[in-house]
Image 1 (cartoon, one colour):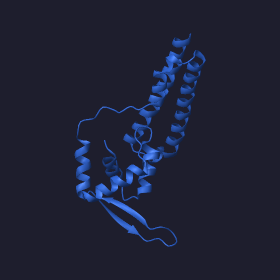
Image 2: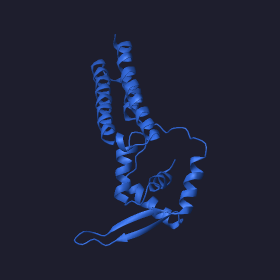
Image 3: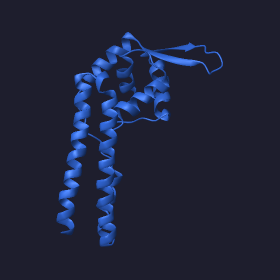
Image 4: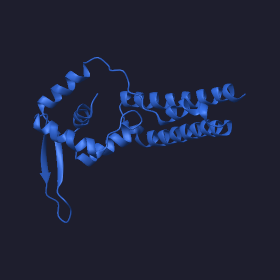
Length: 171
């Protein structure tokens, strides 16, 4: 699913600014999909050109004006149509796995340090994910909770795999 479609999904919940949309990416999807402001604002412009969203400028005293985006009926239909398409294979980009892939040419100490760092990083990410989930849990629907549980389960399994296979690699 592309950034434009995810934005349409967010806007189904109500009008939002670009900043609000970025916060939703960061706080709810970032463990499996993230987008920068550099991707969000061009996508919003394109959605507006395609008449899938409208924008309204809110005049603010002493601050820059706020732009709020709303989904149109055509935008709702486009989102619904996208939700009915076949699931695409995931795109996995992992700095950790690339470093492990090329670890053979490193010293044994560097290899061990790399795996230990990977385990430590995954544990920290799991801790961060659990804390973020606890803050948001009461505002999530059952499918959003399912996505968070899936993410935490994947992190737990990654940690277990790294720990078990560290022993296989180094004894």
